[in-house]
Length: 219
Ligand SMILES: [Mg+2]
Image 1 (cartoon, protein in one colour):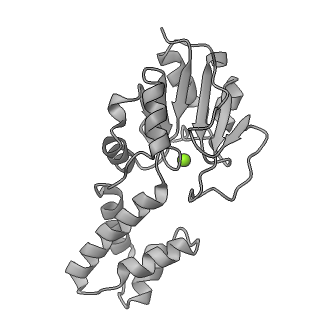
Image 2: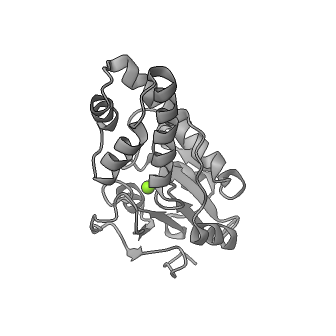
Image 3: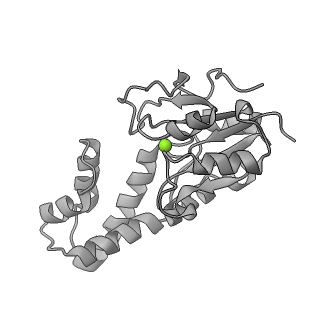
């Protein structure tokens, strides 16, 4: 029985999500070029992302390169994006952390199920964390900030709340659930992370910049 449980988020906690986005756009761009013979999708989409645009990048980029689209085409592109095989790697500090605490780590991650499963596989997390909880698999209403996934992981590992910590990057939704249960919370604020500019709220115990920094882990 482990004395402590360290639960980690995935996106922008163990690798940079922008690297996943880049690969997704590249896969979509290949398909667009084959289907329409049109170039420029990747550069425009990536520039829009870098400029902070979110939510309608596909529509915007298709318009910019002169391709008419409907909901069906957008849905096809979203499927290509979410099902692409990511070329992502654990950041060095994340790899070192998971090795150092091997046997103590679990994962809780939101996001489209297929996309998250592909990320888990690319990062080799099956051998490093248990259980791996993808909230999308729990059904509607159990994504973060719901405490449900945190409660399930705590029960699965048979530990007390005081023995648990959640390490994640998004102050908007990541820490409400674990805090409700009485867990410790650590916010990792990585340069290049999508939520880097957001300030931490009251539900964050400690903020760190890298997993090499000492965090207040349960004993
Ligand atoms: Mg995240």
